[in-house]
Amino acid sequence: MATHSWREGMSSDNIKGLVLALSSSVFIGASFIVKKKGLKKAGASGVRAGSGGYSYLYEPLWWVGMITMIVGEVANFAAYAFAPAILVTPLGALSIIISAVLAHIILREKLHIFGILGCALCVVGSTTIVLHAPQERQIESVTEVWDLATEPAFLFYAALVITAVFVLIFHFIPDYGQTHIMVYIGVCSLVGSLSVMSVKALGIALKLTLSGMNQLIYPQTWAFTLVVITCVLTQMNYLNKALDTFNTAVVSPIYYVMFTSLTILASVIMFKDWDRQSPTQIVTEMCGFVTILSGTFLLHKTKDMAEGSMTLPIRLSKHSEEDGFGPEGIPLRRQESLRPQD
Image (cartoon, rainbow, N blue to C red):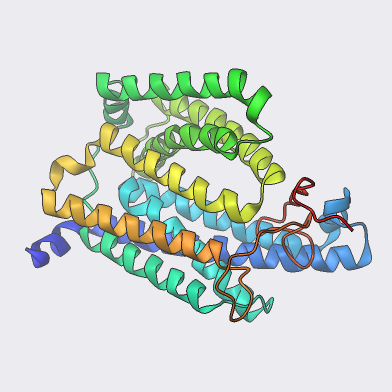
């Protein structure tokens, strides 16, 4: 049965998607470190970004990091055109490992034993998912994707998502956005699940176009493009708000869990990934996913642990890193109510 699962899961398209997803993780993970090096260098000779400065825009190293991140995102975009979201999306956790390892080597940010265990759990979980991932659905036209997106089940899911997003934005964010982390992350994750489905549809259209079957003549291609632009802009806006309001070490793992879970759910509904799998394969994939989640939380929760300490510190200062920036180069909000009095 295991051999059958391997052969069925690792089709040529899945292998292409896997390679692209792994490449994306390497580029994105490395980009955090390069950008941070650029921010530190720029801050040493000008006004730091945390103080409202933009001297990093004149720092070549920061731009190298940005270009590296863009390359990684393009690779991730392409991966969705070849492999199912249930394979591609969880592999995003590997960028956290790359970033942690490079920070340990280059930035001398200590990776403790629990961090190493978290990395190991992410690798084990990712391997489990890769070995049991479903085959990519064979699609010959973007109109087929549109038909899948307009089936009652997915339309119902999309309607629920849009309704929830509007309720969060107009009812909860004004009152609770600055105090409850789940409000901003909820918007990002819900919209993100729709953006990934649209990105996958657009990726399939571009793949077919490059293979000689022009999909740009179909209005569905441009409809998916409009959805991608709208969703990505919304997602970026509220993710930046979350990162600027709350500690990055808390935002990142919670966002990863919610975004990945909702994306897998959306993919299962729209592309019916699990229809082509046995219950054993589905359970194994879920176990792999839970293993990745465990590793991600462990890595984030222990990254600032003092040597030999068994307690997890609460970051009380305005900046969580030596230079004042989280992994994404975004300053963190001071927790005034928790700050000890001088």
